[in-house]
Length: 294
Image (cartoon, rainbow, N blue to C red; front, top):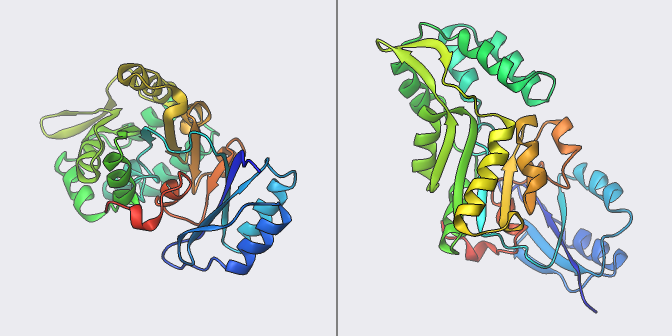
């Protein structure tokens, strides 16, 4: 029997609890092929002849068991390019919120960020308003925030190293700031990064951002420009993000992953990872843990 789709089940690697009995029960219910364990207790996959009609209900019930379910076409699962958001995707924070906390306007800015990421506010207007609240902040605060407040999302290093070892290209595209993306991109091994520029004068933030602002459309533009330059198709791209401004690239890419995303974003994405970390993006491409390059 030919399997047109691959079902991947995975859990949080920090607390792996994928029950083999659960994998077998689902495989039997869906007439799947033999299960292949990508990582013991953590991730498994099996082929199915078509997308099961009750996939959405099963996805919801597995969420209660802290298990992510992803179903992708068997053909072309392994991608040649990674296009990733930065804030709350490759790092565990929102850079602008961390800067705001240092500036003493944390709660006000965090509230605007949350609403903008959920799609309730215009991204551009919300960014201009938040950056305005940072006016007068010492430029050195950026380095301080990077050192003391910014942490990588678990699995990011393995994701980058493994896809790049397999010949993939990696681009970091953020509605955040180049002063952060440059460091994160260098740390994790991205080939290029694009973001907004915080304007400074005499060593202080002016409260203004360089124009034009890189938002939702600019992420789609990055997808179009980079694939064209590399001679790839959009189907060759794995995109990952968590906010409303990521939806354009997530819905255009061959595989768009909503990672620990806002509810409004999850509602528009087929691939949702709520329990796994960034290594989930390797498992859904069929990599096993022993394939990881870092």
